[in-house]
Image (cartoon, rainbow, N blue to C red; front, side, top):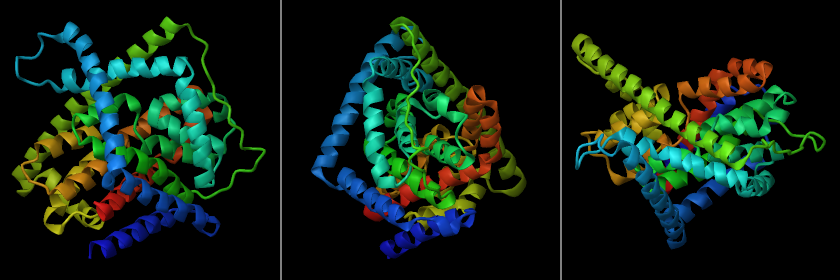
Length: 392
């Protein structure tokens, strides 16, 4: 039964994408089927094989070392802020982002990341049937982040037509930045974080290929990576400050959204006898069921999924961790993969603001398709969750 529901879910997700497509006759099915097959192969490799387990455990262990190094700096600055034996989300989960951001800056400065991203992107372009720039941007987004990635292609931004800009923005919203992977791994099982990263990378192209089909002509398919000339310490201080800004911004968003959701729950419960999150849960329950959540868990899971879209993934992860409802391991896997992306309303502002700072005209273009962008990126999350629901 779950396989029938899973296949139906994929058809519905692709159908919802086609529903808002203005060029349905130009949709190319072959690259979509190839990418779907690649998603299943990668998910099976990561979740069902010893090789995949080894890859994930190595990845998680490496981040564990990095987080332990980061904690030394955090403890020096904020060592007495937390009582012994207690945990502060800001200190323990968010502040290590500063160190990870600095490390990314060093690898970028030494051209190590640029080399990796460029050639993975070139390989990916052979699978997705799209341009080299789109493929580079997808991989770079998963490392640099949804706003920083546009700096690396700022020379091309002003030359891009709207359909190519939409694909770039979809990739940026569907992925996550390497700087916060460590934070995610402290909240979710590393297996699901790594799997979601890979599936979302491909899923972004699948959904964009349906909503926004096009072919890049050879003369348009030019990949030039923009690199800023900075001294080592100028770069390092910039990345450290950027990491701290991310940590503070995420903390501020959590304070605001969790407080607002708590207030909304209280008001709705007092007036209607049902909390705001329960209402969201009932609305999203059919979608949660489609992606593989058992019906008896669908309302609670739907509430968490909806919270991620209307607020952000950290708020939803907090709810998943502290939920009194005991989800099955299968449901935890599906929900966790769904949560690992930047697909939420606040990301529209982040992406539009980043592009507008580099090219005001293109920033206005991105603002016009902002809701369509969130719609597509959310479908990417549902697609990745469906794949895991079928295989787990």
